[in-house]
Amino acid sequence: MSGTRDCMSDKVRKAIIDRICDGTYAPGERLIELQIAKEFETSQAPIREALCKLEAMRIVETEPYKGTRVREISLRELAECLRIRAVLENLAADLVEDRLLSRLPELKHKAMLTVEAARNRDLRQYSLINMQFHRTIIEASNNQSLLCMWDSLTPEVRMFATVKANADNLNDGANDHLEIVEAFAEGDNRFAGKLLKKHAESGLWIAAENKTNKVDEQYANS
Image (tube, rainbow, N blue to C red):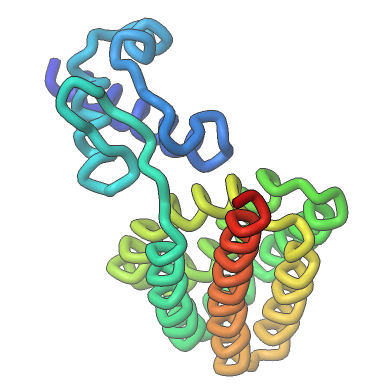
């Protein structure tokens, strides 16, 4: 019985993460246990367990008498995540050796999908494929601890990117992906790592730009 509940709890947790990352659940939106339990045709116990795990991951937050809501990600938190992610991806490139070679066609395909999403200005699709592109590289590092650390940052980055990213910045990111694939294809993993680090850090400028625009809007409306 406990195993079944744990399985349902994990299923619900993953579904909620996906919905938050694709914008189905907006920042600040309340997550009602009873409604989710009815949707998944289960009791509230596994829903409560899933929400507790998500709170530990800092994806949702619970307040007395107010329930559980999707946590809002600040620009400062995003910048912190991107700095760590830049280091992790640079390290992953050093560790992949030749393990990525067999997955290069897959990696290139994902890069082309981000180009298409950028062309269509589809933030949600870009965010999803972007995550898959980078995770392919992390997986090839064959380092489980590195993968776990990278995975822990992904929801926050995707949550912010889906809701607040600027579609005008997508083309640059997609072109970065093509350059990264080319570097790996040429066997220059060290250069690919530098490109990955630069690519992740470019998000810091986007975050700063969004913050500046937000301040400008406040002054314009005052």
